Length: 433
Image 1 (cartoon, rainbow, N blue to C red):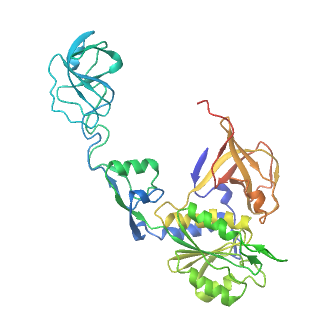
Image 2 (image 1 turned 120 degrees about the vertical axis):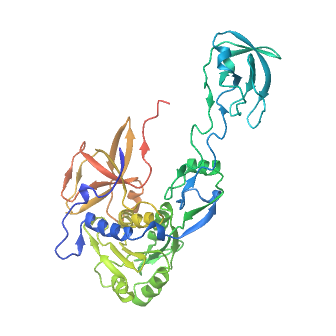
Image 3 (image 1 turned 90 degrees about the vertical axis):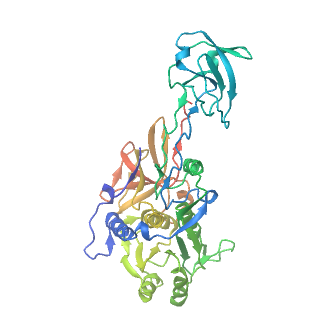
């Protein structure tokens, strides 16, 4: 079953003696430590209307302004009666009126009387039960015959029986879904405080990159990382700000990073390996950006850098698109959650059966593109054949990553394993409904 878990067994490993390459657990612990320094009370908020708050995180507690129901309410279409009058049936009662939802009636039902009442209508005085209309027969304009007995309280929701005025109904830090919208409308909360969405600068680097509308020349490729990161940021509730692609020179990187540091988070993709033109970390140092780790024992995504600049979070992400995607899910998502008042550390993991044999000899925790589905109640994890961290075409068929712990070198078909989910589960069998 799906689980939101924090530091898992597969994240365990040993920090290298050089403190340069960290296992996944140690790297995530560093990110989470810095996340936890951001107190919810210090996060900026803004006031929005109910029409603008869907999928936003509420920044204030919401309490009921009235009892629910706010009055004694009929739960059925039928006849409001005195239970004492319908102990023995059939019985003929005098119909003294009709009350529909939205009406208010000053009627006070007396012995031998009944009132025609609709679902949601306020129950008038004297009525202590409602008999469903299908258990009655209208005799004429003034009389109704009750065919089944009723006891006091039948089909009546008493005032405050569901919730009472002053009760907390939505706490701060809750994501507003469709049902929470209904709650907000019910309590008359037209405008409310939500946590401001963090802005995220996205900076792709590399002399080889051209824009999506351009035709690559020999040795060039189109920039895809900016678009996948843009989508991931949006999905996490952030506001992506794409920056002009930087060339592989210090002055261009410096200029673009300074612009990017105006945001709450800066994501720099490419230029973080050990090559001659991998200049991101030297520029980080020049700008006074504090690097906390620069390499993680994982495949793909080893050259992942996490840093801070004052109260801003800065990342150097690998250049290959699948590596960038995985690093975001593990290390950037917790920060975006925290900056919006959510818990930082949860991973969306599902346990299932591996459908085909896997060999993994990298000596690192591996995250392999996989299709995760549920068939007849059983979870299947089907690794997708791919050709490495640049193969975005194969990875696009996945909805999760099969997790191969660093001490595991082989998984057989039928073995139990975990998958890190980033998209919806696929259900392969139709419901009985």
